[in-house]
Image 1: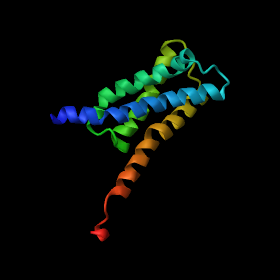
Image 2: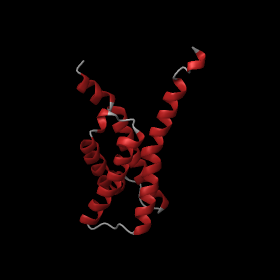
Image 3: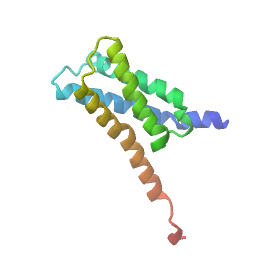
Length: 132
């Protein structure tokens, strides 16, 4: 199999997980404000950040190293928040400072957290030099 195809296929699950966690962010945010959790409402909250995520995945070529925490993880987090907020502002939605802070922290925990757990799991699965 072509290494480029293998790299993109291997990035499918991380890409889906990132998108899923952006939707989780939207759902929890809406729920914390007692807003409707219907598909349209969740979509209205999530889409700017999903667009930011897709743009940042492409810009960083995240499929080359999708599990990286520092690169591309931090770039994905920052790009998702920044582009998401800019799109919210461009479409007349709010981007109040408390929302920016909460979104930044929440998306850091979600987008970087699962990568940290995956890195720990990979490290624990590797046989140590002592056990050989």
